[in-house]
Amino acid sequence: MNWTIPSNQIDEFGNRLLDGEDFDSLVIQISTTVAFLKELTNDTIMSQDATSFQTFKPLHLEVVYMRVRGMVGEAFGTASIPTPQYETSLVCGDEMYLCRKCWPPTRPGAWLVRDNMNQNVEDWRCQGKN
Image (cartoon, rainbow, N blue to C red; front, side, top):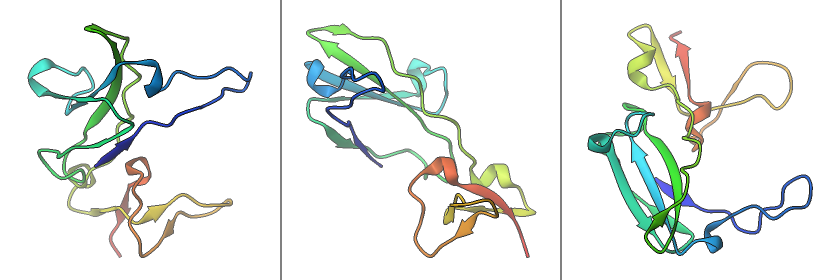
């Protein structure tokens, strides 16, 4: 999985949002629990705007949560909101399959299935077998 920090983001009021340039380094925390228990959390310190990491299990078998914390010196900032939960193949059970090639509709109607994989895990859906 690859992670990139956007820079020079502006909110709807024209204010600059904090980004990686505001900190000495960033800590990317990856966990299999939304509570980020120490024994189930992997910390990666990043001083640039992109990093990648290896998960213990494939993303379609286990939910992985991520959050970011800024560091100035040895002080940690408040952690970001964790990434949302997504469906895995284990949740789908025996009667459904996990569609990793599903895409949200562009207009009212059914979800689309395409040849290329959707990298946004929030769009993965359990689908009925035909």
